[in-house]
Length: 351
Ligand code: CP3
Image 1: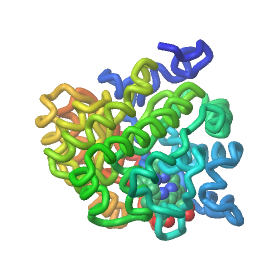
Image 2: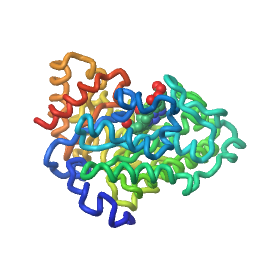
Image 3: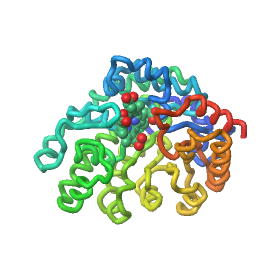
């Protein structure tokens, strides 16, 4: 453990919070809830603040990133903040030409496909992460007893953007490369693992009380490919932060068949997407792993009675696990009515 004595997890601010207690498998004083993608487009105050600033610029302005991180905590009373940033920020900070195109997602100036492209990848330096540390410090100074969750993209999800150069549905480019050029693929994955690992470590050291690795596109892989060509790099990303003793969450979408392999690769808590009921996820993990999830984001737009019935089913299924942090089964859709999220937090806290 190398966290400073003034870190929120060390000085008494967050160690006994409902979120951290549940992440550690204990019994929290109330059911913790937060939402993936709670900071951002569903909030009018976010859209207002972002006018005139691009997405990546807003991530690199510490005061703005801190303010956006705090907005959903103030509005909804959630049990955690998630740091406002993006999985491609480490690329940007390393000097890779990347932008986030509104309505599209991450786009690279030039896809990374050849041995020369990979050899030319710049290393992410420690100093370049200073704006991240500063934003985290500003955030936790305002959060009091509410923990901040740091995050990074898992190497496969990051590398998928690097190889395709843009979002894709089937991830054919990276899936071809892992078989056609396995050594090159491993090199690229190691680069992505180190970039994500350093990005996450900077957030944890600066004051985040938990960390989450997002493998949003791992669901395009079969178990054999995941195990052989992806899990070692995910494990390497976790290696950057394991010594800190901070609870770590591992989340993927479409990864019901990979759940055990993902847990083996790293993480103390498994994030479960909306496709797999939590009691089944718990069974697959041998009844030993704290779970996070998995309200179907599609139901946020359903009549309240339909949503409430679903939420109660999620809580019932989640009660089979050693502990349960309530969340969505993927991110908040941009068109979500924020009032529904606030009401959902009230409901969860009342049960
Ligand atoms: O609230 C939070 O969760 C914190 C911030 C956060 C963002 N991105 C902000 C963001 C987090 C944790 C992410 C992670 C992320 N980024 C993932 C993994 C999570 C997931 O949803 O699967 C992925 C795959 C990305 C890559 C990415 N960045 C995409 C696909 C997009 C959407 C592009 C679009 O416009 O449709 C982004 C942009 C992005 N990241 C936005 C936000 C708030 C939208 C930018 C805007 O406001 O214009």
